[in-house]
Length: 147
Image (cartoon, rainbow, N blue to C red):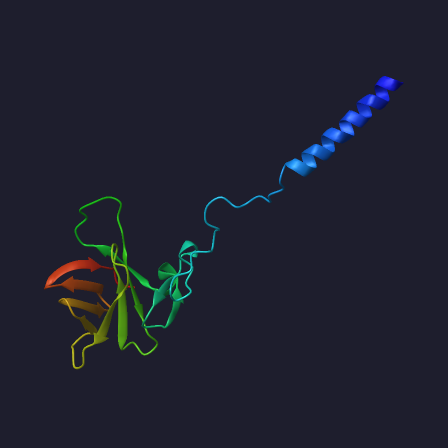
């Protein structure tokens, strides 16, 4: 009986020592928290959102925009560009692979077909029969099929 009591006392003392001398630290998350990657405009990139300055809001390009495919495929994988317009159609924003933000383009007046122009020689056109075409310096870079 003495051995059992001695064992219980030793077990209780060991438990007290563990609680007193081992500091309690709650588990800390390892790495960034999913969804905690908001940009300067409060868009969550991990959820697929990008800020569109012509719309003034966060958008998912594949939902809000029109995909344009490269005319000449140089490298893998195929990376699409996207066109997003404001409600009036007077502004268009082109999002290109490798560019940190969209290129804002302004609609040209008196053009035969809808045309948007931006600095750097960028020209975007839309023809209902031929689709979207994006050129830089007179060279066709991206295009889409007619919708």
